[in-house]
Length: 510
Image (cartoon, rainbow, N blue to C red):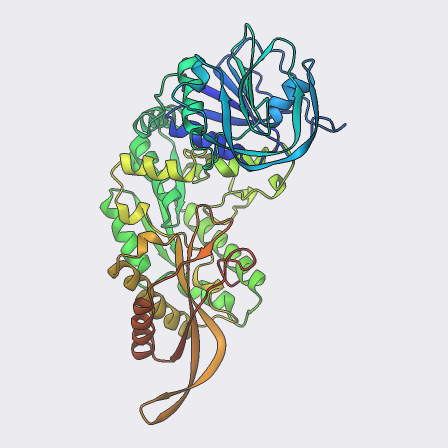
C-alpha cells in the first residue's frame, strides 16, 4: 500500500463515495476524521478534503490543522474543503444569492491545466452547497466556472493545491472520475496498483506474519463477506482455520446442506452444526420481533461458544468486518459510531471468549470484497448471493415461530427464488424473499372452501440496503409463481406482492 491517499472526513454524506471512486482508479485510500489526523502522515502521497453539512462561517465549523499537509503534499479540497481554504486563506465565503444545488455545467475552463485535461466546457457537475466563495484566497487562480458559480475551481500558486465547489465523486458529475484521475495520477504521481490480486498477496503475507501457527475460529454465515474472509485465511494458514457453520433451523430450504457441501468443495475446514431444535425450542411462543432477534443472537452465542471450546488452543476469532463498519466507528460527526456492529458475522460474542480478533476485509468496500473473491476463483453462486438476514426466516414469519410455519415458508421461498433464477431475474434483484403473514383468508380449491395462510413476496433493487425500490417483476412471472405456490405448498391459498419502497417501508417486514 505504497500509494496511500488520505481523505479527511468533515461529515459529508458523500465521503465514502469519494473513497470508492479513488479505489476504482486502483489507488488505495483511507478515510480519517478531520479531528483525528494520523500521527504518521509520511505514508500518504496525497490528501483530499471532503464536503460537510457545516458552514465555514459557523462557530462550530470543523477546523483541522493542515500545517503538515497544505503546500507539502498534493491537496484536493472538495466543496466545504474548498470554502475552508478560501475562508481561512484570505478569501471570503458568504451565503449564496442563488440556489447552488443540483446539476450545473462548466461554462469556463482555463486553458492548459492538467487538472482539467480531457474535460471540456459544458461538462456537467453536481453542486451541493448554500455558501459560495466570493473572493479567492491569496495567490489563487480560477480554473473553472459555471453560469452561477464563478469560482467553481481554483488552484493555489506554487502549490499542488486544488479546490472545487462541486462533487466529482457523484454519478451526476459526468467527468468526475477523470478529474480525480488527473489529480491523483497526473499531478500527484500515484501509481494505480491497488488491485484485487495485489490485495490478496499483501493480505495473505500479513496474515501469515500476524497469526503464525496459531488457530483461528471463524463463524461462517454463507454470505459473501464471511466466505471471502475464510478463503483469504485459508490461503494464509490452511488447516489452522476452523470454520463453524451453524444451522439455526431458519435457513432457506436445503441451504445448510448445500452451503456446507460448497464450502467443503472449496477445501475449507468447516464443521456444520445443526442446532435447529435448540433455536426453535428457545423461540417457542415468542412473537415480538425484537425479542425473537435477541433470542436467536443469544442461542447463537451459546452454540458458537460450545463449538469454539472444542477447538483446542484457539487464539483468534476471525470476522468479516468490512470498511463501512470501520468508517462508521470513527465518524467525524459522531453519528452512529457508538452502535457499530461488533462481531457482526457471529452475532456479538461475549468478552469471556478472550480471543484476539482478526479482520482481513476491514479495508474493503462490499464491491471490492466481491472482486477479491472473484480473483480467488470463488464461484459466482457464492459471490452473487443475495443478502439474507442474520435471524433468517424468523423475521419473515410474522408472529410466533413453529416448525410447521418454517417448513411452509421454506417451500414458498424456494419456489420464488428458484423462479427468479430460472427466469434470469435473480441477478437483477438486490434482495428477494417471502413473508408468512399471521392472517388466514378464505379461498376455493375445487369445490371446497379453504381458510389458509397468505404469503407476501418481496423483491427490491438497491446498492447498500440503506434505500431500496421495489422491482417491477414481469406479470407473467408473478402469475406463474403465485400459481406454483398455491398449488404446491399446502396451507397457502393467497399470494400478494409487496410494492413498498424504503423509505418509508423497510426491506424486511420485522
